[in-house]
Length: 225
Image (cartoon, rainbow, N blue to C red; front, side, top):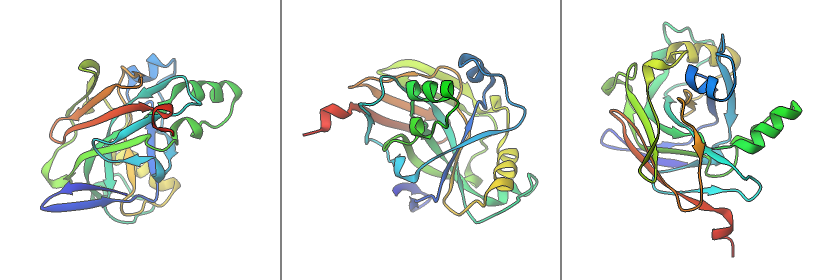
């Protein structure tokens, strides 16, 4: 559970699930050698991967390459199943930033073997969120700048208008597969420019109108006694 500033107080982000979109920006799909999808590609991250702002992303010893991915995240406001795109925004509470941290080498190896790659996405600390939750009535997210820097170096920069599948379509698709619960998070995909993280890195991710999410990066070995 993560507490984020929201309106005049705080909102406890405690999802039953985190649903992520893959390949929702054409340039990112191409940089990883994938075709642009004809329908949303979804996968899950466990709620145990959540951390808040200014906490530490831990690089697991088992992985030799861990990548950053900045994403616009949608927080669901009420329970829904088989939601039409026309009514989808009725089910949205607000928006924040999510970093879809990925053990890329483990993902590549799993894909090579034709196996699921949950392990690459599911480590503790692999879903930082923040810095706040913005009410949907306060922000039009159809064309916002989003970006990410590592140690001051620009890595990712794009606009949400470049998303292949927009939020109403995404909600319609996901809710045709699984019930969305209040508090669930939908991460809407990352733009091109993903890259590796190393011990001691400092991440600064931002989305226009939401703010900046800052996180440190630590190797697992550095925190073990």
